[in-house]
Image (tube, rainbow, N blue to C red; front, side):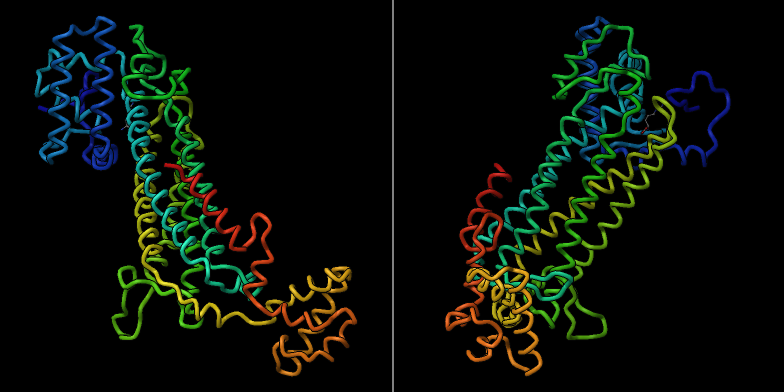
Length: 459
Ligand code: ARG
């Protein structure tokens, strides 16, 4: 009869439903390579500590590489009793190299420090990959902003037309959020890269295992200083889930803007066919499903974060099985944010803009602030200029004209400070170009934003 790896003190067998409830292999098998890497490094520390002789360490390393290639080639035969990736790999290793040597690998190690180590190894690789996706998406945004600097569209507050801005400025406003996300992601790395291995179950190992050797073998930045904390700590996972939640909230807000801008009523952008779908009943429909999913999936990731934080909150010191609940939320969030970043990159790379529609949505009343600014330059206090400009807007509205159509007499009635030059205010390009302080939408500041963004993205 089969025996669980921990089965020594047991006489009864596990309830089948309990086995199913307990087993994590169905999802933690994706960490197989990290588990093998951790074990190979661990065997080297055992060699140095004199637990293994050189031939044994070599044999363990060879066996582990076979295990890894079995997984990679889809040939690993999962057995009914396999509980998680750690027990499955060790079981298979002993089958390949024999129990006499294979049975020595777990000396001074517990699945508690093993799983925490594997998760960190796995997450460091994934973080590097996700960073790449984020950079790719940002590069698309920045390149578009650089190329499409001529287009001017309404900027909105409260979804009401407010003031003209460059399309590039709008796009870069979203890029700014993602640039912060990029920095935050990079800042997570030192806290992911803390080595638990050597902490064993909770009380450390009695073999003076060289943890510095383990650290350098596995490329960690630092070593966990407290064995009880090292097996208990899942803050790096919480932080990653929080990072993913915020990044996807940014993506959701961008998606929402683009969904609105892609309606026939706005028509500022047109999604490519590659990222749209049709309707099963209405032949004319082209729906922005990609953007809607980017918006919708942000809720899902936030849910994973909230769920795991709730799982953590009552867990006593060190390892408790509740901690196995870290995997599905993390894996799901990594998959979701990875897909979202790549879809967003594709959407942004392929959508087309309609500068005529953008221009057509600009109305002269959006320059009412510029009229107030005009009077400020003539020495009128802003609060008064705001009022005068407001009266000009009302006058135009009441007589069903645009503010730019008021006559010279009407301007002079509104304020003695108006002269012929007031007509020059009614130009959107001029309005945007006047806003040339750092952070403004003027052409020179777009150039600056592009350069600063590229520096922040880095190589
Ligand atoms: N599959 C477990 C997890 O993911 C590994 C650690 C199990 N440790 C234990 N003492 N049962 O958390």
